[in-house]
Length: 200
Image (cartoon, rainbow, N blue to C red; front, side):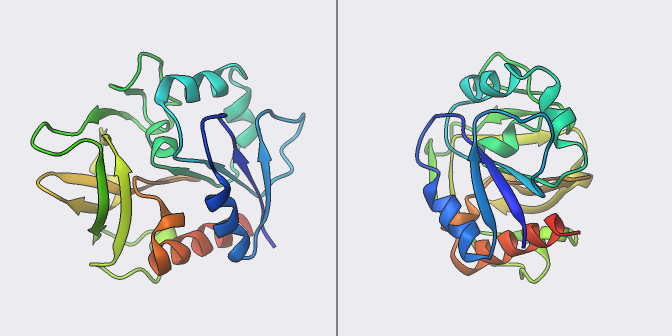
């Protein structure tokens, strides 16, 4: 059984995510600080909040957060995924920088925030995409999108006027721009895949 921790930025309701993880068989803790040693088999950065306050909650730990994570699988959801990058137009703070690139506001041609179901175009196989078919639908709620330096880390996109990176994978970091906990069967497949990685 995977023992995972959701990092709580103090920004809002994360219990639907907790429930979704528990339905998939995980033991879930909610943390807002780090112990001396990481005893969790997976870490989740949830998709609730704003960039600078969320980064402040991480950065008050200094470099300890990335040291704490080590090679533990990390799932970043929406904002959590955006924090993987070097910077975001939503704030002035530096991101975690585990993926090169930045985060930009959605183009003015789109209604912001973008909310709704969109289908996924799978670019290449990914560990958390196993069993997810191209054209599967996922639920998005966001105003920003990732702009990675290399498209090689983008395993799936969603096209709604612009190609939005929907799933990224880099080492032990996995990110979804959408909310898997709100994406029905598709989201549950991805959550189960992440938990499988946590058991390795």
